[in-house]
Image 1: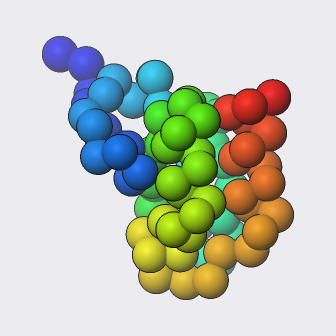
Image 2: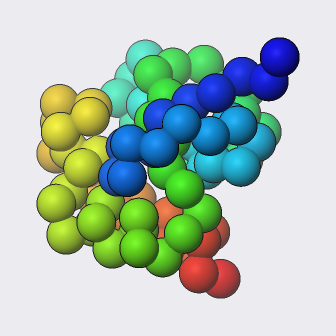
Image 3: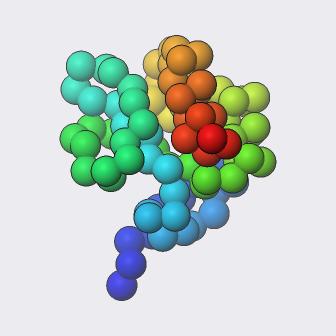
Length: 83
């Protein structure tokens, strides 16, 4: 069975390969994890512009990782999804 993960924006359960993973490592650094194998706390988002807008507007990574997430991280996620 495929591994399902929940999008933090729309809350839909999808195959983890269909989602973009954002990870917070032990040092507190937050980055986009294209490999899906980086160590740390992971959060997933659909590769969809609607979910991206909700993520940015509500600053969902700040809530998920319980820390202030730099705008650069949101910018990198936008580049991954929109191109």
